[in-house]
Length: 109
Image (cartoon, rainbow, N blue to C red; front, side, top):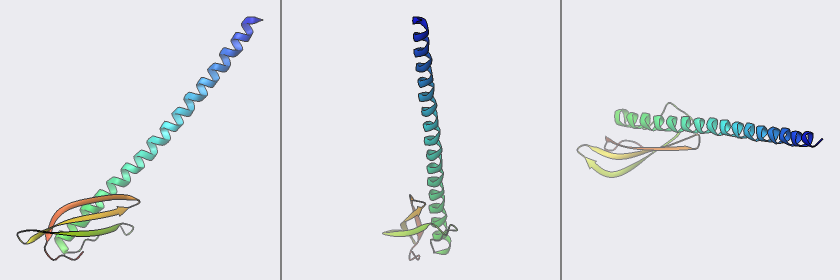
C-alpha cells in the first residue's frame, strides 16, 4: 500500500513538471514571435528613413511610398559645399528611426 502512495505522488509531480515546462515553452514561443515582429517593424522604419533621405537628395522632398509613416526633416545648418546635413526622422507603427545625410541646401522639409 505504501508504494502505491509514492507512485501516485511521483505521477502527480511528473504531470506538474510537464505542465510547467509546456507553459514555459508556450511563453518562449510567444516572446520570440513578438520580438520577430518588432524587429521587422524596426527594419521597415529604417528602410522608410533611407527612402525618404534618398528622395530628399534627389527631388528635394522627403517623401515615402508608405502612407502610414510620419516623416520629418531637421535641418542642422551645417553646410558641406552646396549641401546641408539633415536628419530624417520616421515614425512607423510605433517604431522610430532616424538617419543623417547630406542633402541639397534649401530642400523642402
